[in-house]
Length: 93
Image (cartoon, rainbow, N blue to C red; front, side, top):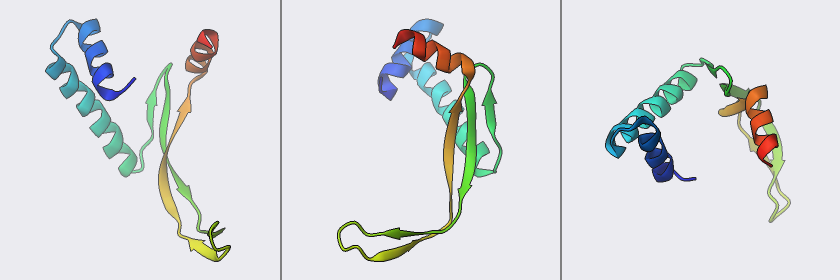
């Protein structure tokens, strides 16, 4: 499912316009993004947790040349699914 399909499904379930659903979805995504950028976790009970995770600097290797390279420390977004979500996906699969 892509973003347009998600917006259409939300609009259908809520009985609102696609533009209203798109605005709501954008607001949710922006809020999650801003919270993660501020170092806050976003917990959605029954769905999962969005976290900002720090990764330490490490050594890597260029697969083309075999040359060793330094990979700098960074912060990445991570999603941890709830037990309920995992069970729902496993039931369908």
